[in-house]
Amino acid sequence: MAGFDTVSNRREGGLSVDVPVGDNLAFHVDGSYRNTDDLEIPGYVATDRLRAQLLESAAEEEAEGHLDEAEELREGANARGTLPNSWTETYTLGTGLAYFSGNSSLGVSFDYYDTNYGIPGLPGVGHVHEGDHDHDHEEEDDDHAHGEEGPVSIGMKRYRADLKGVLDLGDGFFDELRTRWGYSDYTHTEFEGDDVGTVFDVEGVEGRVELVQSRRGNLQGSVGGQYSHTNFSAIGEEAFVPSNTTDSFALFTVQELDFDRFEVELGARYEHTGVDASDSIGVSRDFDTFSGAIGASYTLTDGAAGDLRAGVNLSRAERAPSAQELFAEGPHVATQQFEIGSPTLGTERSWGVEGYVRGNLGPALLSASVYRNWFNDFIFLSDTGAEEDGLEVFQFLQQNADQFGIEAEASMPVFETNDFKLLADVRGDYVRATLADGSPVPRIPPLSLSGALEGQFEHVDVRAEVEWFDKQDRVSEHEAPTDGYTFVNASVAWHPFEGADNLTILAQVDNIFDVEGRRHTSFTKEFVPLPGRNFKLTARLSL
Image (cartoon, rainbow, N blue to C red; front, side, top):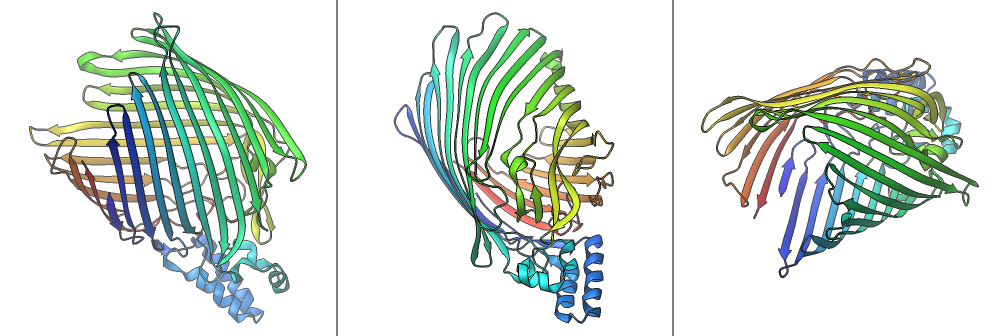
């Protein structure tokens, strides 16, 4: 695969090779490289709201005689066309070996991931939030304000090894044994210009063993266990999460009863989680969680009419808080906010119900669901309205909440001849979440709708699509609303060959009308807009 685009001057290439070694052995190797420059954007880097605040601060600085500071603020407010410090460079390399014998198999793999990328900030202002310039200049000099440092970037390396196996157990109660184990070593380094800031190291192992039951009449299922161990350490002034170790062990089962057109599924899971930061801050927490679900579905149509099923799921889920939710305290560079955890957080619990219809009705593919969840002690990250070190302070809190959502998508032929087919795709997604005090849950995505038409010729596919995102003005305290936007995209794919040997040349243009868009779910939406008009060309070859 090879490709490039115009919005970031992306250059990328990848290669994957699978080689049989004898009758029962296969060897795999893959690699890729990707490089991008700073993103081109349709308008200003900052939102109108943030621009007004920066220009107001610039006027105040100028009135006090701080001309250089005022000029920097105006430069940040008026920056447009390019998102500064948004470049990336990524290398990957993977290899593996797999052995097959009848229904049994065993495989091992190793992969290496190396990426460097910039953390966007306002030009002339740097990595600050809106309140940075409310501090006096003596404090800024003492604290070495972010705006005076070099651009912030991340260097990340990950090494990972995996083992996966299936053992055929014959005709007993259990049909086969499945296992999967993985080890990873991850290092994340934050650079301030050329200087090393904070280094995060995460080393972990995870594994899963599952016994798959032989089918007995109407019953089939599996039982198993899962284990994970993660050791996290951070060294540097901005180590906002203290060093800690997280261990978890789980037992689970899934059972399915099949009565021809009617199916019942049951699942249960017990998990013990320990989060230990006793060596760094003298705090350790343990959690026991139980989750379960029951679902029933019925086949509405089968055979030539299609395969359409309707069902309902009931669930009870529990989740232990993470180390970051418990122990965070400090500046989070990636999101440019000051995060504070809550060591006393309890287990998050929820009840849920979902009704759905999925499958195909004749040539049309359909999927639709309606769901409702009731949370006890829902964990969320909330803007407190305070500031620390020039950053907005966010704290992990707990409160009861409920959530309602609708999702639907469909794909269907509109017109068809012997050598041409016209397909239509539609999709919609809506969610509403409210805390017990009546306020909205922060950062909930707005209503989104999309539609597309795709013409399929013998060797050419042409597609045009529209993606619409509504404004989100149902926001929590201190949360800024987000304007709606519409993206129009188009693509042409040419595939001269069919079958296993395949060549595809794909030409695309995203955001044809160069519209400004911002994701409401992003912590950095006020100064990180989505990319502008983008022409892409990609070639894929399979032999």
